[in-house]
Length: 116
Image 1 (spheres, rainbow, N blue to C red):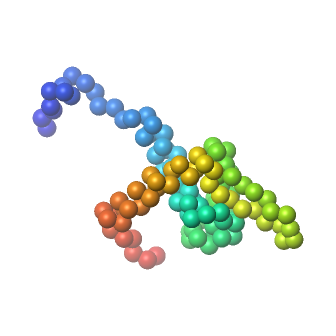
Image 2 (image 1 turned 30 degrees about the vertical axis):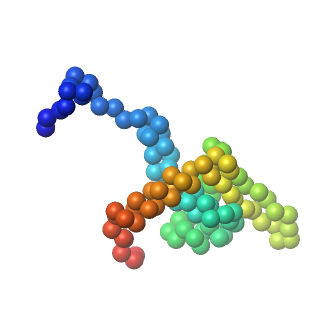
């Protein structure tokens, strides 16, 4: 492979911001949960139904992780019945345009997965 003069003698590197973003968003379910919450607040049971294949323990872990980094907030609703709602914070909502762009790209460029 021929290397252009601008790259001769230089090593190619990955942008560290991209690497950190995909390490976090690429973690199973994190990006999908954020994309689901882009449609508005949701309770735990609603998220479980919206994300077929995720276990309740994994959903709980991921929501906790997303809350710790400030992308999702957790609100306890007084009862009865007592409820918990999750929604994107401003930081989480800032990701929605990027998630929308990824979704459009996937629809246009990736084959649909067969039903399982």
